[in-house]
Image 1 (cartoon, rainbow, N blue to C red):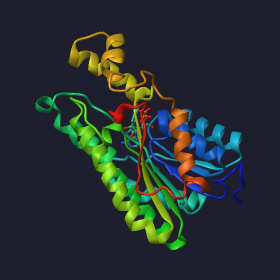
Image 2 (cartoon, helix red, strand yellow):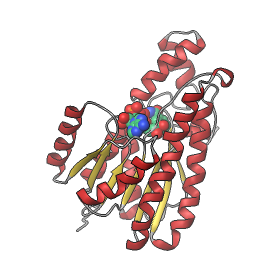
Image 3 (tube, helix red, strand yellow):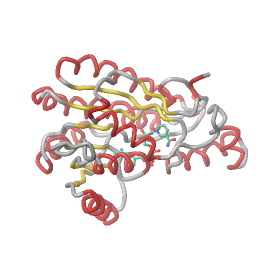
Image 4 (cartoon, rainbow, N blue to C red):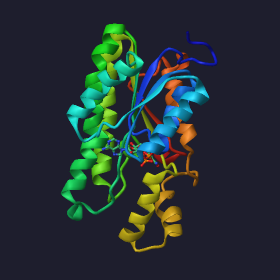
Length: 266
Ligand code: NAD
């Protein structure tokens, strides 16, 4: 039974891309709230097994792992029944898996465009499509899509990511409208910069594109658009995701929630 301390007790949450960074913190926040969690993402098999066991022991919940590749619609569709067989009905879906590639449009590798659209946008559709029927039948569901400040504004050299994340914000609104009569909410979280492996790689890529040092990339490129020049923590993003799934979050639906230190206030 849900309690004030464990508002997600008895729920099952699927968190895509949760072997690292923001997704891992969201999996932790869901488990801390009392939800059983399906982890997903790439990584070393032994490390993932340890991660799952650690989360389960720390929070007294069940944690399983699906290796579903977010570029494969069939694997994404199968992830939901897999979660249901292992953990129970999927009440919470967090579409978090994402990749980035930084290059000018005319030099943007076509395979990177296709991969970013597949993982960052189409996977959100495929997972939502698979989870919605059960949520509708049970008249309760929480869908949280991790978009980005780049779901609301653009930066140069990130055309595929910006296109995908704007798509996620739009798709979230459509999901919210379709879920409204069925006890289902859908919201997008739009973080500014959070220091994760995804951003560390970008620092290297931007250094190459701009021909400047890593320190300059962090100060003059990465944090430049934010009013407050600091990275957010993964826990801050995870806290918002868990809040949206708890009782105090139930009136949010169709929102694109900025957590970007003033970036999109300009
Ligand atoms: P990360 O690189 O630390 O984690 C990405 C996760 O996605 C990993 O678990 C990885 O294994 C998984 N993944 C990648 N490709 C996959 C695939 N084909 N199938 C299944 N899983 C796959 O990145 P992060 O920074 O934690 O990013 C998480 C999400 O947050 C992404 O959607 C990203 O766009 C978004 N975001 C990040 C930031 C930031 O500053 N870090 C800002 C805004 C939005």
